[in-house]
Image 1 (cartoon, helix red, strand yellow):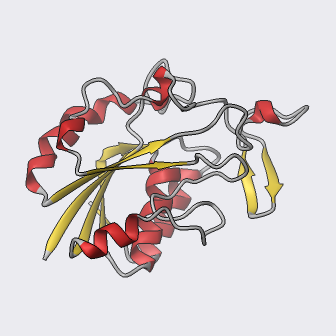
Image 2 (tube, rainbow, N blue to C red):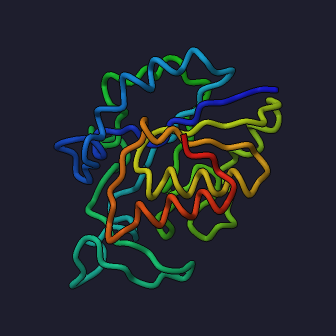
Image 3 (cartoon, rainbow, N blue to C red):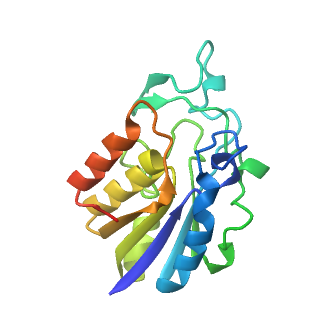
Length: 198
């Protein structure tokens, strides 16, 4: 049995003073680093948007951040511009131990579709390639940590469970945006999908 740690989006823009700061986003870095040696593999995900991405409120006339619009693939929260390719905001938090990563999965780089999950874009069909990587390495168990609990961690955990992986989320090593009750909704959704919340 092989067990991987998946570290979701611990990037400057999701940490204090970032463009889309998650409260306490930097508080989890030390604990994540300490956990890495317990796993057979460590995978980092990185939000990696082109400028003018379709999920940015600034790309839609008259729209403001956190409004929800309908996209061809379903509802889309409009975000402040964040994690733009090559920017300081897109870089991993300086204290995160990136040297331990076996793989970095970049997501959200297609202009017309957002990607919360480490496994699929927001159409829930277009794969990132992470599933194939894990299968070929014989990895069956996943532990997820990172940012934000109610969006990218949630979507990644639910997709992983649906793909047949044994999934746990370390809630102490995640932080949430909690947009209009999104944290409670995410917790119940993860539990219903068979994800263990630790």
